[in-house]
Image (cartoon, rainbow, N blue to C red; front, side, top):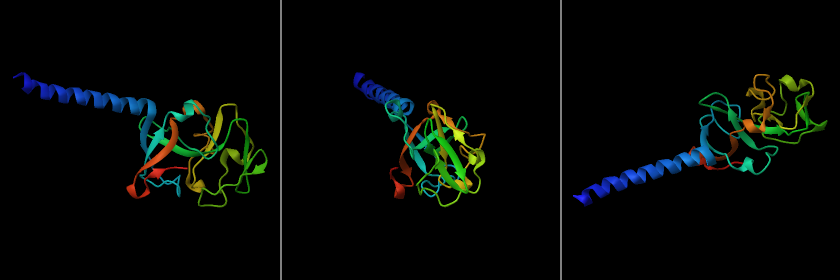
Length: 175
């Protein structure tokens, strides 16, 4: 009789341990999110499933061109690329991004020219903990140029987008 009870109790114990480990990982180490929309194309596609690294920014500073996630609503995240760092001045002139008056050399987006500079049509001076974020699909992205999104603070970041899990054909670590 005792042997018959050992097996279900062992199974229940193993399930509790597995759930505890899973919760620990989701709360402190990584989190799944997905891309909804086309604002990060061509780098990320609609319905890509991603893992957010929630640990690295506890020990290091975010870098220019990191892809980060921050809350959009209770169930979703915005995923954008860091363009401007704390203390920098950002401006979009004639479709090009300037940081501290110097043209930004990058090629993440589809477009060479940004059609709508939004708040960056004038100078945007970032505070000591503020970041300017853009989607890679610059002309189809709701990002820091839009006053409803605006510049973001480091403590708003859920973390750095680290791995694409799905589709499996594109599985891998993101740059």
